Length: 132
Image (cartoon, rainbow, N blue to C red; front, side, top):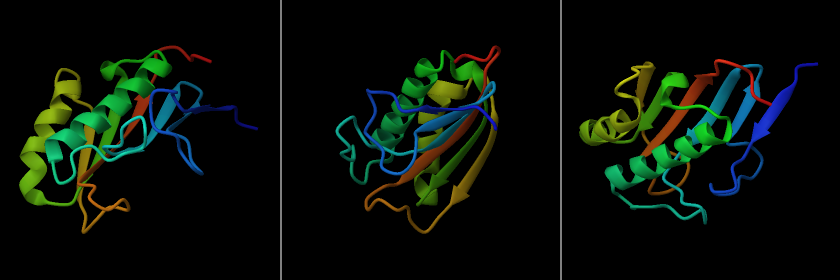
């Protein structure tokens, strides 16, 4: 049986039916993060910058929880609902990743599950040493 660690930092909104991240060995899989604050409220309805900043803050909280930093992100995938917002979204994500340049994919989608959500970001992190 594979040893899995469920990661749900206390300073991020509560989840229902999934974990914010799962660690298997030295790899951490971060679920898609959206602009939900600690109370589960959408930050910046129709504001791509505010939503991206909150999603990035959620990712940072997960990184902190596993003892990692932005340099440990090896892959990111971003889902965006409007091509016109892409430059602003990329600039905000770049505040986290610009120095480390992980592999990156962007997917343009018709919509995201939570109404008003503009962006969703997921990531894969590889830790130098497995942290339990």
